[in-house]
Amino acid sequence: MTDGANQNSRAVRDQVLSFMKDHARPAGGKRAARPAVAPQVNLAPAFTDLPEHKQIVAQAAAGDQLGIDNPFFRSHAGAAGATTVVDGRTLINFASYDYLGMNRHAEVLSAAKNAVDRYGISASASRLVAGERPIHGELESKIAGFYGVESAIVFVSGYLTNVATIGTLLGPEDLVIHDEFIHNSALIGAKLSGSHRRLFRHNDMDDLERVLRSVTGRHRRVLVVVEGVYSMDGDVADLPRLIELRSQYGFWLMVDDAHALGVIGDTGRGTAEYHGCNPRDVDIWMGTLSKTTASCGGYVAGSEALVTLLKGSAGGFIYSVGLAPALAAAAWTSLDLIDREPERVARMRRNGHLFYELARKRGLDTGVSVGCSVIPVIIGDSLRAAQLSNDLMATGINVMPIIHPAVPEGLARLRFFITSEHTPEQIDYAVTQTAEKLEALVERNFGIGSVDIEAVLRRMAAEA
Image (cartoon, rainbow, N blue to C red):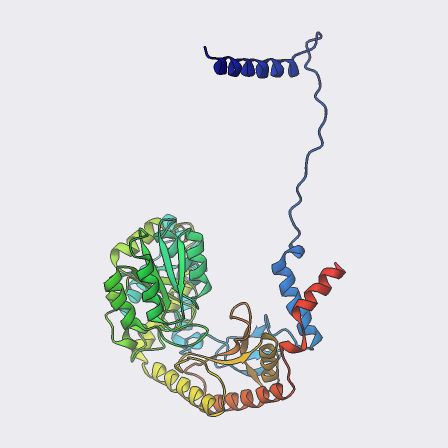
């Protein structure tokens, strides 16, 4: 045995003897008591100490300093549509997804009530187990036919639809490339999937191609995610160029059509119809049932193989309760009405165009919106946007601010949702009041410069 081996052997022997000595029983047969060691306690941080919480509190404090009422979480009495009721006042409502007025349509209400009478309130189980009802399959067939693809699947939540779909299809060896302004649900789905992520400049297909060239051959699967109509900006994805790039680079293309279904295209069939593209050139059509179809939940439409995969593997589908039958019935009826009452789609488009043209004439910044269902009026800083929302409520207009971090600071806005049920008079009044109230705020130099949020944070830290 070598000297090195002898030394190792002795070291092991010494460790064994030391262990036996430390654990030897005394003469009485009982093990000697080991000295008590106080456990080390690592306390979890308090939620109030988290920087995310402090930022929210600081924004609220800055609003309080300027006397800005919180415009969020106001309670609305009754059903929302082109008008709504808050604190007993009837307001013109530009904060509703009810683009085609289906939320109060007599047939939609009747379909939901009949479904409750037949199936009860809830599906009461995952569809895989015992929650399947005929209306689920009927709705999925309706959605697939609406898009002109093979099959569809509905989820209990629109947000969950993106998270579950992306998480099922991709993993750590894969890549998600997304528009920089993609919806948060797709972004979180990409993060939770563990896949690599890259973004491209908003609706910039040349920048997307630059990213694609830089990653070719480096990943197992590549998914490109865009929105049909962008929920914050109201512009439309360049679908023809996306399909061209798909054929060249071989990625999966996913289009979130939540704000496009029932809105764009001659018959309201969304982004593919708007551009005159073949819907089967898109791998994954995703959307929500809470906008045009006056319901709740989400869907994916595409090939039979895609839907089979999601129904058998997507945890957000397998382990979630089935969509409430009443919601499925409401969505089915709304889709049917889009075909039977095409004037709703035409009227919504006319209203969007009217708002857009009036806003531009008044010098309001509508960004890149094409003037359909979503029209932002870009204000600048978050506090000014919140104050303008409150000023408009005082005149009888309900429109919500979109502030940091939902959009970058400096791009805060009021987001107007235009519906088929708004009247030209309501639209003209809203644009006029927005322009006048914004001008008054500018003259007062009211905004983020009035309050230093970082200074508020420092003061809060000092007082803690």
